[in-house]
Image (cartoon, rainbow, N blue to C red):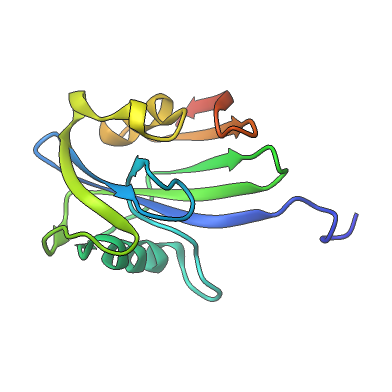
Amino acid sequence: MSTVDSPEIKQGTLVFILRDNSVLLAVKNRGFGKGKWNGFGGKVELNESVSVAAVRETIEEIGVKPVLDKPLTVVTFHFSTGDSLQVTVFRTEKFSGEPRESDEMKTPHWFKFKAVPYAQMWSGDDLWLPYVLHNRPFTAEMWFDSDWKNIRHEIKLS
């Protein structure tokens, strides 16, 4: 099968910044996930490492520079279009700068772990994000229908 006929697997990053049993989230203003609370990240550009992309995207989105060690996990999202997004997930308690709004993200807010607004996040985030918050290594695959609802998941603890 040629690559033209094959579903595409895009590479992405996602950063979760933590302090005092709280996680920093913001609402997407546009694009993928518009109107949903999320961590920070995006596409990996040509010849860019995932960690460099994660830092760049976080600075662009909320003006905070995270200090990243190794990634915690990879979560693969499969969509009804046949496309997939493989997201390298980082968590850190080390960062510099104050969160601010940007064209891409609004309303940065610290949420206590027990008060994360899962109902206003991507369908299925409640299944895997607690592992990130509590620094529990895992891998996950998430499948979505055409309405962006999570219809299947596989999560394996490492």
